[in-house]
Amino acid sequence: MLFYEPPQLIQTEVFTSVPTAFRKPKGSLSHGVGVGQKKESRDCFLEGPSFDREGNLYVVDIPYSRIFKISPEAEWTLVCEYDGEPNGLKVHKDGRIVVADRKQGLMQLDAQSGRIETLISGSSKERFKGLNDLVFASNGDLYFTDQGQTGLHDPTGRVYRFSASGKLDCLIDTVPSPNGIVLSPKEKALYVAVTRTNSIWVMPFDEEDKVSKAGIFVQLPSAGPDGLAMDEKGNLVVAHPSTGLVWVYDRKGVPVYQIQSCKGVMTVNIAYGGKDNKTLYILESKSGSILTARMPVAGKRMYSHAE
Image (cartoon, rainbow, N blue to C red; front, side, top):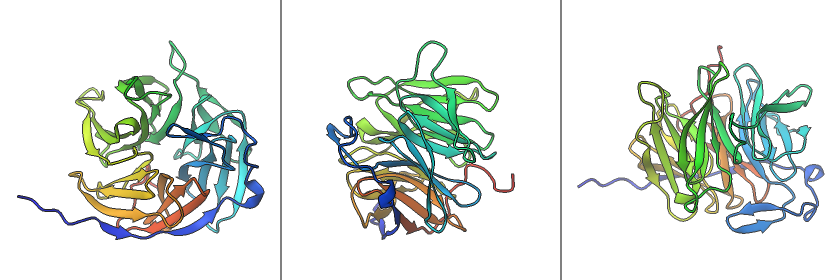
């Protein structure tokens, strides 16, 4: 019989919070931000963390459709404000910023000018349901989740690949609420946070680079998972909102680290950064804070900084 050690506890500290000047008056938006079945009016709601090569952290503010840049010294700059609902964001190896927007589809942002434009608004047959998160492969292919309002009642969420050559393919269309997404270390499989089933699915690629034999990698208690990250050893990092936790699972799906929020319970998304890429940045969206935790293993980069 196998016995596993309990996960090692890792503490966090606050790196920065949304400055008062950038917080909106509560109640200024009628739709608020959905948390489970509850709608709440917020002065901000951060998501989509991603670093550029200079060490700047980009995040989105969902309800007010804003994109911020945060310097390594924790200085905030408003890069863009537009008509949309940005949720996921990733910085391409060529410096372009791509945003998964629930209202507008895939957007492309020029960080220098602040200009944002639509990259793809849907497939050839219909518009997207509502994009959530995305990740780049080392070859420039883009993988993203199309969540919308799907769930156990409507398991029709999708995962797409938008190739570097411009081809859009739906890899799977039977996911009940696909959320965070990340590639395995050798990019032979996708891991997808399936929020409404409280689980992480693993989706290996077959010889034709299609999704094959999708299954459950880990099952979470309580609330469903959100953002994902991968470290250099192949450990999967999972943001677990409504619990104030981030979990780190090894290749066998065993939890090896538990990271506890020092600020609030809405730990929605994560990104590795810092000079050695061993600092995990955690978005705690209820307070509008960004937390950090020092990790024993560096995060896996989407691309080499030598490229």
